[in-house]
Structures are given as C-alpha cells and as structure tokens.
Amino acid sequence: MSICQLVSQDETHKPILLPHLESVILGRGPQTTIKDKKCSREQVELKADCSKGFVKVKQLGANPTSVDSVVVGHGKEVKLMPGQLLHIVNDLYPYTVQFKEDPGSCKRPLDVSSKDEEGCSETPSLKAAKKHEHLPESVRAEESREINQNVGHWSHGLKASMQDPNMQVFKDDKVVVIKDKYPKARYHWLVLPWISIHSLKALRDEHCSLLKHMQKVADHMVQQCPHASSLDFRSGYHAIPSMSHVHLHVISQDFDSPYLKNKKHWNSFTTDYFIESQDVIHMLETDGKVTVKEGTSELLKLPLRCHLCRKELPTIPALKQHLKSHFLAESRTSNAS
Image: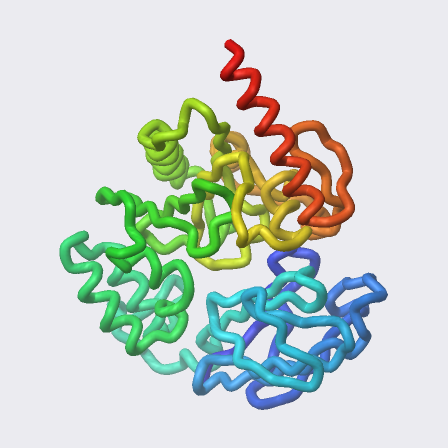
C-alpha cells in the first residue's frame, strides 16, 4: 500500500506523514512551524485513505481552511486529491499531498520496466503521466480522456483545461496557451508546457530552454494583442501557485476584471509574490533551481497599494476606482499628443 505525506509548499519543514485512516490534527505549532494566532492549534483534521488516494480534510478552527481557494467550512469535510492545494487558514500556509509506494513493500524482484528510480513499482498515476509526456500532439487529447477516467488528479484544474480545444488560443509541440478561466485583467493568458512539471520547485537547469520558449510564446501573445500599443504587460510565475502544473502568466496591467475581488488576487500579481519570467530563467541558469524566499506567502496579506503610484487604498472597489483615474489621465495625454 502507498504512504501519504503532507508537503509544505513554503518548504518550512519536512513532510508530515499521514498514516492510513488515522486522524492527524494540525494547526499552529512546531509541527507546521505556523505561528499565526489566527490559526488554531487544532485547525484541521486530516485522514488519509492510502488505498483510494485521497485525504479527508475537516475544518476545526474558526477561521477558514480552503482547498483550491474553496472554503471548507467549520465542522465540514472535503476530499483533498493529489494536485490540489490546501491552505491551512486564511489562504495562507499552502500544502499538497503525495502518495508514494511504501519502500517496505518492494521486497520481491520486479521487472525493470515497471520500476521507478528507487526500484519500487510505479504507481498508475506516474505511469500515466510519463506516457502522456511523450505522446504525439495529435493523440494527446484522446489519451487524456483515458487518463482522466483512471487517474483523479489528471482531470483536475489546468491539466484538463489545457486539453480543451475551446480553451486553447495557441499551441505548438512544446506548449499550449489558454485563457485564464477567471482573468484578473482585460488580457490574461497562461502558457503551459505539455510535459508534466508539478511546480517551480521541480524546475532544473535543463528546463531553461523550455522556459525561454514559454517566454517567446508569451511575447508572441502580447504582440498579436489588438491593444498591445496602449497596454503594459507582465509575464511571470506565482511563487506559490494555487494550481499544480507550471504555468506562465501573461497579464495586462489594467487589472480591469470582475474576477479581481480580494487582496490575495491583487497582491499575487503586484508584489514580489509574482516572479518575473526572466528572473526564474536567471535562477535556473545560475543556481540550477528556483528559490522561493521564506515568508513569501505573507506578501498576500500586505495592504492594497496601486502598482503605478504606490498609493494605499482601503478596499478593492476604491482601488479599482483609483486605477480608472490613472488610465483616464493616460488617455487624455495620448489624445493631446
């Protein structure tokens, strides 16, 4: 049987073992290193089902625990699947779950073709992922439907959206571009590689050429935009993304969208939580990996500040009204010239 681990996306501590069908209660304390007093010492109850590949999450604390930005609710319970993101409290302290083969179960000889790098048999999800990476583009969609039926987390989120022809706006043999389902600006695209890369932490120097190609495609998207001359764009990655599978955001800086609703949305694109594409490439070229600074998740809690003049605003509606004044002034200057 597999073993389950709860993995901190902030890398603040070692993975926490979740024994099969045993209740594990976590919150503020040394095990999670969380010191935030808004997080109860008994914030969540986790119970892993290693035979079925999911974890039951029950919110015990008063403040919200969420799975993929959906609040669980006090006393309520939801399933957490591999690839989904658990925030312990208030959209902070992100975790994922990983199911791995128990090394103790790999005692009898195995066919080399069915082993992973550690000599244990590969799980069905790993086999499916590896198979999918090397498929010709013409058969990816058909194969993806089969994977979706058998491997839960492949049907989740971005990995499903990138296979949807209605979502695709550009594709080649290396990447696909989709529109963000909940755009935070007038133009908001996601550039995703066909190969499966779970997160920024999984990137290494051999991925440099792929990320450079992703940036080239991002530039192409901006160039073909009908309002490129009147809008500024940024392309980059969230330091701790809410969705699995590496994706490059290409977003116009007007932030004119009804889906931009809260402080987390704003700060995820206007603080150092948003890492420029070229900075990620530079880290890979110099260090061979991407380093996310400790405490990065706290940036989402910063006050609302205009990204143009740095004025602090009390609410999202006030911020949006303030932004309109900037773009109105720019429009007048442009017409005058």
